[in-house]
Image 1: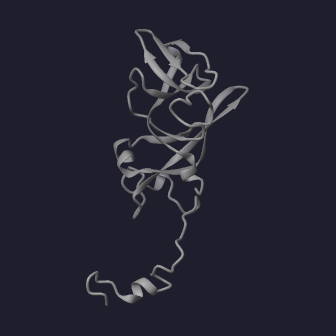
Image 2: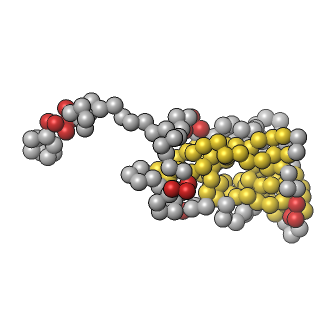
Image 3: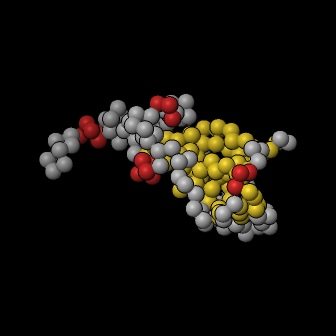
Length: 179
């Protein structure tokens, strides 16, 4: 036994427990979904990150919808502060000044929007957009913020807009490609 660290040679050399073991990579099949969360934050037992659902915006002739595509990890401290959160994949170029295309946006569905924040919104019960939010007395302005040719600002009556959630965190999608 190595006295300084209380580690025996078997702990290091063993093929079952030691450094020579192949790490078992989790897959989407063996990762718990949101329904199996053990503490309400999405934290899997023994893991430092929370596992949350990922949704992708699908466009069609009838508008857009959010389609569930899998799960991704979020830092547990962030997920603990935003327990009603989901990831939305940023696949379009409307917000490239803030978020790279393909990044995952953590959207808190309980957070109240404030002027200047980024929201995921449902417009006219048909179109889902990710935009900067500014509200007046009776109107909402949803602005794109892009290095590319920006989409036009949407200036709408408040009754035509339903805020799905406020973006509170984002991460690169390549961190989650193995999921």
